[in-house]
Structure formats: structure tokens, C-alpha cells
Amino acid sequence: MSIHIKVNNTEYPATVNGNRTDRSWDGRDTKTIYLTMSHDAVAALLPDNTPWSIVQRDMVDVLDEQGKPTGETKEVVNEYDNSEYSLAGDITDHRDGTVSIKMGKPTETESAKATVTALAGGPVTYARAVKLRPIIEQAAVSLSDGEAASVPELITAWAYPVACAKGDRRSYGGKVYKCRLGHTSQADYTPDKTPNLWTIINVDHAGTQADPIPAARGMEYEYGKYYLDGEDGKTYKCERIGEAAGGKIVLQYLPHELAGQYFTEV
Image 1 (tube, rainbow, N blue to C red):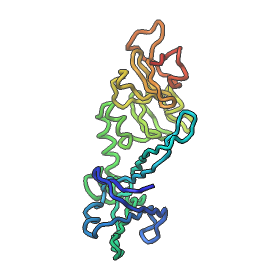
Image 2 (image 1 turned 30 degrees about the vertical axis):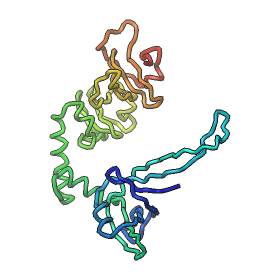
Image 3 (image 1 turned 90 degrees about the horizontal axis):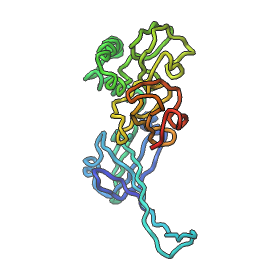
């Protein structure tokens, strides 16, 4: 077996060791990469936020239909993305032709600060972020349903007890829902469990066989459109005898659970 790291579509022979809790670097999860190159070359190859992966190459026996070795071998290649280890740390020259570099994951605090900075366009204090949040949520009201569904982090979070009007949008469980009926929210009536009150909003998809809409429980389905069922990985067309294309219905089930009734597998 041989190990390489891959950067910019180029592979470099390497040894990689992991440390889930690196106490020498704020207790973060790190990977130490050993490479045969100079200190400066390593620094140039792996600066902060460099996409990189580990490539594992193995030679395995080729088997016949009965599962017996044929005497031939083939190479099997597996690639594992490690881009989440995005912070470049200490570089050490081991004086034997090899140099190592630590690549670390951002801590939760660092990730939170980076997220706020990205949203605000620059570093802000916690107090400032608190003031900006309602402004961001108010601005998000102007987004289309498709745009809102793609950025649930910007949409007002569902909470209780709160008065919700028809048409209001709320984020819950990483998804965006639209209120179907005015009501005051209650602890036991979350959007994912109350299709009579909330319908999930689809991120913009054409609903064609080539671009099916990801299905979800409690969403509004449209007759004539195609949906991708995440549980079985199959595509279904929403159709029912007596229903015309364009008609809509909210269902608390996935397509494979209603195949033959509201959906046809394609």
C-alpha cells in the first residue's frame, strides 16, 4: 500500500499521522504530513485553506467468477478529502530529507468567528452581531422561496410560543418551512410534524426527470413533477388518477411509501 497527498491534482508520496486532540495546538484535531521536499516547498504547497486529500493505492488480487485468484493483480485507488484540515501549522525540518507540516481543523470558536466575519463582511464584536441578526433576518424576507430555502441560516428560526401568520417562513432542522395557517406555535407542534400548519420549501429544482426535487416529509408536492427520494435513491413522478398536472398536495410521506398511490417510480 502506498499513501500520497493530492493537491491541485498532483500527488505527492507522504506519510500522514492523525491526532484527534492535539494539546500542543489548542486541543484541535490535526493531521501531520511528512513529505520529501524543502521547508519552503511545503509552506508553498499547503497554506491555509488549501483543498487536499489523502490517496491510498493498493495492489489486490483479481478474482474469477468463483472468487478464486487468477494470478493477476490490479490497483485499487481510494481518495479521502481532508480539506476540513484547513489551517496550516508548524513546519518541521527533520534533517533527513523529510519535512512535516501540521494541518488542523478550526476549533468551534474559530469556526464561529469565521462564520460571523463572512456574514458581516468583516470582524465584529458579539454585541454587534446580536444587533445585526434581526436586520439580516428582516432582509431575508425579501428573498424568493427558492433563495430562502438555500440559506436556512439567514431565516428566522422556529420558536415557541410565537404568533405565526400565513406565509411566514421559519428555519427548522436545517430546512425552511412556510406557514400554511395562522397560529401560535407550541412545543410539540414542530414544522416537520405538522403538515397542516407548515410546508417545507424546496430549493430551486426544475422538477424534471433530469433535475428532480429532493423529497421530504411534510412538503408540498406538485402533480406532474419528479421527486428524488433520499431513502431509496430513486426518482418518482407525482401523479394520481383524476388529478391534473400542476395541482398540489401536502404529504407526510416519502414517494416510495406512496408508490402506486401518489407516485410512480421512473
